[in-house]
Structure formats: structure tokens, C-alpha cells
Image 1: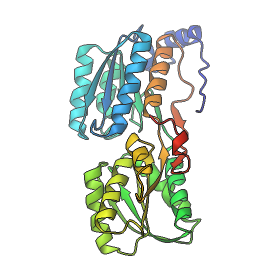
Image 2: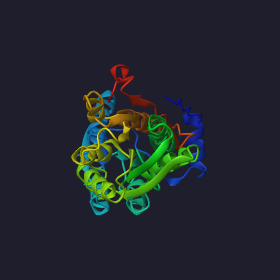
Image 3: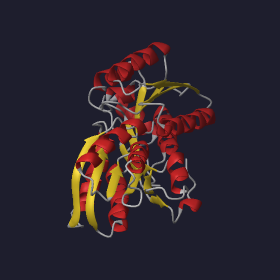
Amino acid sequence: MKTKTFSIVAASALALAAAGVLPAAAQNMPAKIDQIGLMVQDMSNPFFAAMETGAKDAAAEIGATLNTQDAQLDLANQNTQIDAFIQQGVDLIVISAVDQAGIAPAIERAKAAGVIVMAVDTPAVGADAVFMTDAVQAGEVSCTYLFEQMGGKGEVLLVDGTPIQTIIDRITGCNNVAVNFPDIKIVGQQASRNDRASGMSVTTDMLTAHPDVTGIFGMNDPSALGAVLAVEQAGKSAQIKVTGVDGSPEAVQELNREGSPFIGSSTQNPGEMVRQAVKTAVAMTEGTMPTETTVLIPSVLVSRDNVAEYPGW
């Protein structure tokens, strides 16, 4: 885990605030974190369930209450949820934004009301800081392993997702390493809704158009596992290898399933994202402003070779 230091002492922060040097959000700070509002994109995704578990642990550690809201991948829902949190008087909002730019006005309203706002998993414009997996690295790790296991040659499909920065970055990472494999050809790319059902659907469509594919990268584990279902239904389990991103419990189960086309996943740590976000918010209430506003958590590969040692979520 990358360690981030916070170097402005409380007295300095107070002096800067008095002089009007710190931004408004730093001057309009809750004295203590008593209420936390967690906003997730889609609770049907196990990633966000693990994020809530981390939030519960972090809230319990500081004696705060936690209210979790599910956006169901809808920006309008997140706008409404932020306004409700403002009315409830929460001290900290931790958000995994559905739309990083579209949520900006609502975040500004929260900060104007004295709420600390921390983004997790993907950036959110106006948030005080963001804690996320190094998503470019995650795409690079997963696709490097996939291409190597394909013997450095063959046709590949990319199962993309909703257009948020963290997903865009994973696809970028995959494309980055593809240039190192001149005999790898990316022949298809379609966007899922980040879940297993749509991952299966778009993969089925792409396999119809590209029957000779031997590798598939899913930008998260649910979409990758949906691709696995499509591969198996097409009778191509022996032909195609699949990798994902998350290191989820479902991915671990699939790696342990005999005969599965799924061979690896680059990890995330959703609980740790929230724990770091809460810790930083507490430091802010004590006068210590973050010197790093983007904290990237490294990603590593979990495969059949090391899954027994992987601690998981």
C-alpha cells in the first residue's frame, strides 16, 4: 500500500484559514465526524458490498453512524442522495460517483454546507480527495497476463463498461500493453453495464462476429464472469482465456472451478479505499489538510497459481 503523508499541522491550517488562504471547504469544516454517508454506484456488484463493509469498520472505529445509499448507476439518484445527506446533517460523504463531472454541482452544495466529500474508486469533480485503485496499472497487469497465457498471439475482445474514469483507465492500461504484443489483435470492444448479465450479452454478440477469438479482457470481474458464461455457452472453453479486474470473491471461486476459462484478475481493495478516505477526513477535522489529493492503491494479479495465498476482500 502506498503511504501518504499529511504535512500541514493544525496551527498552520487554522492560521491559513484565518488569512483566507485555504479553500472554503477547509474553512467550513465539521469539528468531528459523527455521521457518514456512503454512496455506491450499484450494490448488486459485490465490489460495493465490500466497500460498505469497509465503511462500517471505519465508522465503528471512530464512533460514527453510517448511512449507505445505492445509486443503481443513476446520476439523478446520486444528486437526490447528496441533497438528502445535506438535510440530515452528515459530516462526511464518501462517494463512488456514477458520473464524475455530472455530480460536481451536488458536491459543491455539500461542501458549501460544511460536508467533507471524499471520492472512492473513481474521481468526482470537487471532492476533497480521491482514493482509488491504480486503474491503468490494473488493466496492464490483467492484460499482460492474458496475452502471455495466449502465447503472445491471437484475437482478443474487450468487454468495456460505463464511461467513468476508472473503467476508461483500465481499458487504457490494456491497450498500453497490447503494443508490446504485435501478434495480439484486439478485434472487438463493447460496453457492458458492469454486471454479469450485460457482460454475457455483449460477449455473445462479439463472439458471433469474431468466432476465432482466443482471449477476452473484462474491465471488472462481473463483466468478465459474464464473458465466461458466454464462452461456455458457445462451447469455446478450451479455446478462450478470460481475465478481469477486482479480485472479487466470485473471481476467487471461479479460479478454483475446474475447467473454467477464467484465469486471472488484477486486484482492488474496496474496503481499504473507504478506510483511507475516513482516516483522511478525520485528519482534516483536526486541521491537517491532505498533501496528496489522489491516492492510488496498487493492483496485483491473482491467478490459479497464487489464489490460495490471496487474502481477498
